[in-house]
Structures are given as C-alpha cells and as structure tokens.
Image 1 (spheres, rainbow, N blue to C red):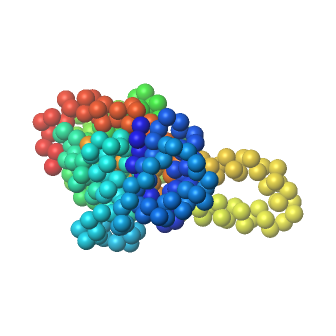
Image 2: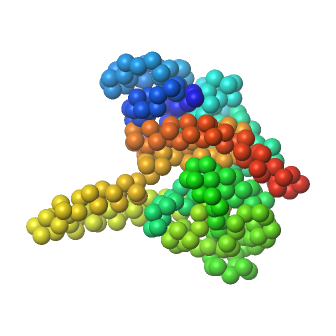
Image 3: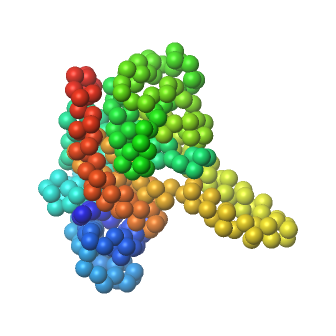
Length: 338
C-alpha cells in the first residue's frame, strides 16, 4: 500500500509527522509512504531522525492550510496545499490512502472535492473511536464534518460506521445508538425523531436513544449524531481526560506515602493513560468519500501519526469503501440522501 501523508498538517508539523512516518517505514514493511509538503524541511527531519531507507518518498507542495485558517478560503488562495496535493495522489491512483493531522475542515474539503462521495452517499462523516470503561471503543459519528445533517444522513452514518466497526474492531454485530437528551423514543428535536424512525426501520442493530454518558459506559458500539454535538463531545472528553490525569499526578506527588504507592502502581497508571490517549487510535476515518482519508488530531505526536498510517494501511487493505458500497447499496438506494 502507498500512503500519502500531509507532512505540513498539525501543530508540530513537519517534525512529528516525519518522525511518525519514519517509525511506520521501519515497522510496516512492504508499504510506501509519500510525504507531501515542503521538501527541504522534510529532508532535514528525515536526516534528523536517521532515516536511510527506501520506502519513503517526497513530493513538494509549497503551501499549507494553517490550523486557524478558514479551510475553503485558504485552499482557494493556495492552490498547491499539502493536503490537496496528497488528496490528488489518491485520486490519480498514485496512493491508496491519505493521512492528515492538519486543519480538519481542509482535510474534509480536500477529500470531498477531490474524491467525491460513494454511490448513494451525499455527506461524509468523521468516525471517531472513543475508549469505554468496559475496555472497548465506541465509534462516534459524526465528529465534525457535517454540522447540519438530514435524518437520512444520520441513517447513512450508522450504516457506514457499522461496516467500519466490523473491519477495524472485529465487532461482529455492532449495536447502534442515536445521541439524544433522553432514552425515551419521543425525545429530541425533529432531526432526532425522524432519524430515530429511519434507524429503527433499518437492518442495523439499533438500540434506540442514548445519552452522552452512555458513550463512555459502553452502552453501544456506535453513537450517531450531528457533527456539532459529536465534535463537542470529542473535545470535552479529551479535556476531561487530560484534567483528571493532571489532578491525579498532582495528588499522588503530595506525600511520601502517595509517591511510594504511585511508584508501585506505575504500570497500572501507564496502562490507563495509554487507553485514554487518542494517539493510540491514530485518527478517525472520513467515511462516505470515495477514497480513504484518516484525520488525526491537530496535536498529534509521532505515535499518533504512526498509528494513523497503520489504520490507513489496514482500511485500504480491507477495501473499506467497496464493502460500504456493496453492503449498504440495497439500503441506500431509494433514500432521498439529502
């Protein structure tokens, strides 16, 4: 597989992106990585991290979309941004997947404009895996691509996430919940009520409405919601996890007895921190576009970039989009898909 990586995307790009790509090149044998961005800076960091292999290529792209820029406006002004050039590689068949930790809106826009959507799909959604207290994951879709979905969009998100959960996490019959302000069938606004009816009629293993805390309790494997709510949940969860770990570290260091206890429990604390670390999941696929796009966190470290490349390889090898098209076509055909 050939993975195009937006080398200029992310808070600490291109250094951490190159570092993650080098790690991937050493562990994911047989696959090629194409780093797209400022060739001089990429070359510098490849030397810095001691890369002497043959499975990383570079493609120069003079521009990048900043994290605080309006993505569509920036891409219109800057015709050769790293994320757009990387998307073109996938579209033209020179790469099998795209990985970006840059501006989320830019990654979504570049993918949608370059790849288009899968047959029957009108809107793409970001499927973000989140850890649960049961030790598994709950896939939240949409985590920020579509702020104003229709009920049919939400149905399609559930269908695509169902296939993704089977491929990525080996869940045989994923359970699906609809995010709402209560569990009763009649709860929520018109969008929620209409989406509830569509999901209930579908072939999905739909369990009904769920609330925000159910995501972390592991009440279901997939939670469907609009992009505004999904992104807010994702950011709130990240902030809460960081806050709790910071408080725990402070409290454990206050007395000698606590410090000794912390030392004895160090491996357990590391395991918990690892389970709550978004870098372990590598990123979230943008489901619904006619290409593989993995969107990593803007604050991604080298481990997250490595994981994102790994996820991209796996989904491309498993032919995710073909499976979505084949398995969902019968359900999607005939829907309004607005």
